[in-house]
Length: 364
Ligand SMILES: C[C@H](N)C(=O)N[C@@H](CCC(=O)O)C(=O)O
Ligand SMILES: [Mg+2]
Image 1 (cartoon, rainbow, N blue to C red):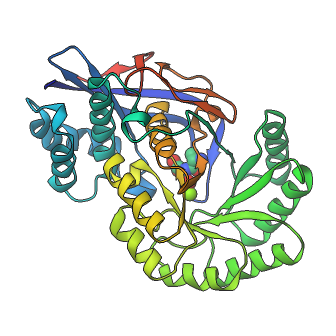
Image 2: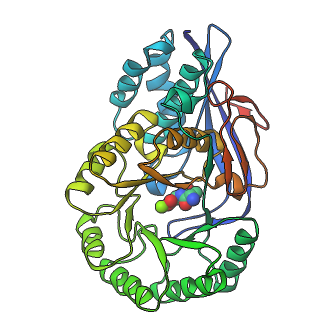
């Protein structure tokens, strides 16, 4: 199976409610979609969102990278040469992790299709049924409480509260949501780098002393402040998770070495795709460090690729934050994994199992 064409498209899906974090507010998912076509008539799909505040990637940078760097590298190449291809994709340019991820996801999709096997089975197998949390955007307190209650009514048992805008108000937000859903849902927090190390310790200790049980706190301080992450991790009982602080395997080794976090959030858009995500899970497993598999605000192409990878890497991947299909007004991807509130069922069809994409705007 040889790659004979690389096509690009744009896909936009409106959200049910605006997605608000300490870093940005958006009201739709908008991705560059990569399609790798083969001489056998197969298509491998990948996607890349423009999460410039985290990865530095924009739609323009993704399109340019795919066109000028990855397309020449992929054309006329055998899909069966997967490992050599992924090494070349990773080495062809620095950064640009979302573009690399889109291309790698499409390539792994084709690789699994070439064996007529679902992606998670090609990656080593596992359970085809997974459970995700859902994100509650940072907002005024009554809205967060209402969103949390409606998520619990939909069956979500883990809520990821976005905080990091204002520490005083954040504590009120957390206490209010905790009181509203106590005993019905577990809370994890994501400050998206919005706190200082001292603020984080005071806030988390205060919540611990007040009996507010938190599963974990994700990325409390700036991505590059590993000392700050360690400062917090050493002073609180609640586990601290690194998200923006870790992109590839090198950063994971540094975080583990410096004891800067208890848990690692693996996202394909940070790792540059599946090959590095697998390495990170293996490194973490060797060091007895748990992982979560998360996603950016991206379409279910990438979310599904992450879910397949997560299934194959259980139990070191013990947590999921793959909620975007539940945040969207509809899913334009036909075929593939299915999403129903907290439940994700992986496809048993080859690769990612994508049959078609509705509303895709092909780029010339
Ligand atoms: C969508 C997911 N639940 C999430 O919160 N992901 C990121 C932020 C993604 C974005 O801004 O697109 C995270 O920080 O964990
Ligand atoms: Mg995060």
